[in-house]
Length: 226
Figure (cartoon, rainbow, N blue to C red):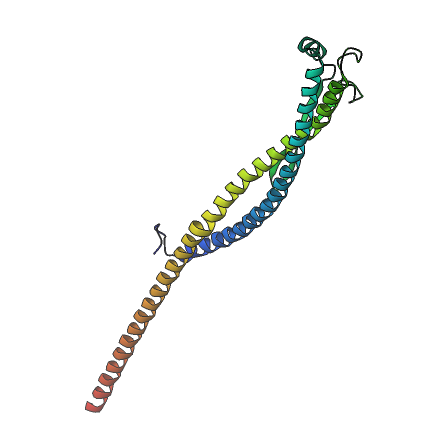
């Protein structure tokens, strides 16, 4: 018996069947969306893993170059060389839709046209290791921005997968079974009413037939007595 009270009428039965068909179509679409999102998510996670390893390796190289530069230069000279950055960037963000999930796309423009124009100091008073460190940091910045972008995409897709999974489960284990149970209940009640009506009609028919037979006997008896 359904958990909620339903009106066992043919109109309600038709309405519930329509809702059930809609829910089943929605369930299939949500399952397809969940599966495709999961595929995209796994691809993104693999990309994150690969890119993160590259970024960490290059950052270690940057750290090593800065360590050597700091050993070859005085702390004051190193601080003065890096005090006023020459290059700056302007970050912009757009969005790309992946299965109804808006994932960010990061892009940046440098202050000067040449991205390699990043050295804020003269080369006479600095070591070559500092140049290598600054150059390596400029290169890894691109990958760091890309890593932030795809990690955010993975986070947003994971959240959407969880929401979609809950909706699929709600339809599959709650809403659709409830509607099926209500349809079964109404169908059973309508069948019971149909059988009861049939029995009543048969009884009425028997009574009419019986009365007709009695009437016929009376007329026959009167005719025989006259």
